[in-house]
Image (cartoon, rainbow, N blue to C red; front, side):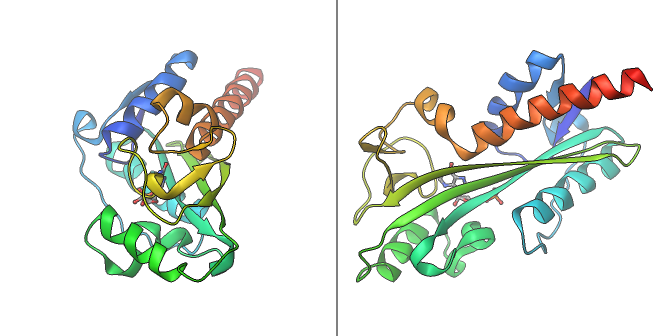
Length: 199
Ligand code: IMP
């Protein structure tokens, strides 16, 4: 069975391929599926935005589609930037967004934060599945590390004693919000296919 990924992010494509190939699912990039959709993310939750992206890719390709929506939620900022993580402060780069978040947390000692990912799968028959994953940590006072992307250099994980930009991709996948949501989706899809076989 083929799924199209509603994203052009090669990192997300690799992660999804790794996990879903275990179910015999081939994940195609938008280019491979011959589509190029980028719907406006008008939802107010990660689940809504993941569904908006997956529905658009399914409608354009006629294939089952999978999408992820993710971000960082900082406790002392009431969960901001949350669903607006990619657009925080209208900044042009990851580096600027990291700087802005550190500036907004400059005088704050309570530094708990979490990454959140919601994954949606939408089938051509209209069936929709959604899963969520979280990864808890603390914001540092300055960026550290060269790996990863986005807010990884300021996301300290006590279990590693390092930021997510200082751990390997395997270490990150084992605890990350997206890794958790994806493994939950693998379980949900297994149940879904079993149920379909019974009908
Ligand atoms: P999305 O691609 O619309 O889901 O936007 C997610 C945004 O949240 C990205 O631009 C990053 O800034 C941030 N983000 C999500 N996941 C991660 C992660 O694993 N590490 C660092 N930043 C992340």
